[in-house]
Length: 353
Image (cartoon, rainbow, N blue to C red; front, side, top):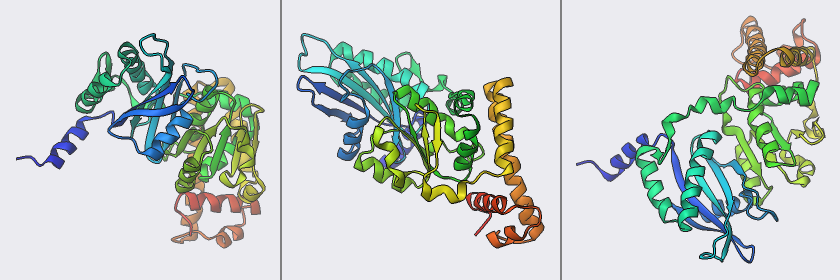
């Protein structure tokens, strides 16, 4: 017969939405927030992070969709107020879907279905049924995983807005992404943080196709900061005003409220501006005026590829297995700052040692 582990693997391969758990958080009349139900069980540490991120601790409950990531797990959260005579103890709730897949629009749509079911029953009972159905078929009610294209989630943010907001400072964003630096974004609204964070990988990381570096909404808690340290490379977002002082956690600070990008003193060495950077900023700003969103994404990807190809060409000309900074410094066509930049690019792309 089929072993239980084999049967589980087969079921998991059919679970294309890669949903790992559903959770329910409630805020009671005493304003205490806790994870009251999850299936399969969400760990205590993960539950505590969800409590902080879900918005149920805010003074005023806004029915807002939020999403973030802890370790390799994407968290999708939808809060709703609860006002029911039969259930006076609970004032608000948040439904959570955990998944290995990045697609906020897809899971927002699923959460709308689950929230409606929860509010009709005011109990987690329908959620158990929902999880089992989702695990087996990746569909539930009117929602089906196959209606959504995960690739669309990568380009759902507006790169043109970011270029228009930050102007020439996009050269710093580009450098930080290409060189795999740690980026921290601050904005004063959930939508402000999320829309900016999801767009940043488009600046120089398209060829890596790694949106897993996002930590879209963090509250600077101990467990979250530990996760950042483990991640090494990330684009994290927060609404915590203390963020700008946490310089040990970023190489680039992006403040959406003042439209300023700051490099802390410890990271200045690799972030100098060269002719390459100026050319990038000018071309991309021009494109943002004339091109579509996808047109701008293509130009950034093209400029990034041209930069990496340039570094590869020099490596081939020098006939070395691995570029050294001393090799690049001797190159007659490179200024000192360009040699440094090219060396950092080579390290990020595995071409230097």
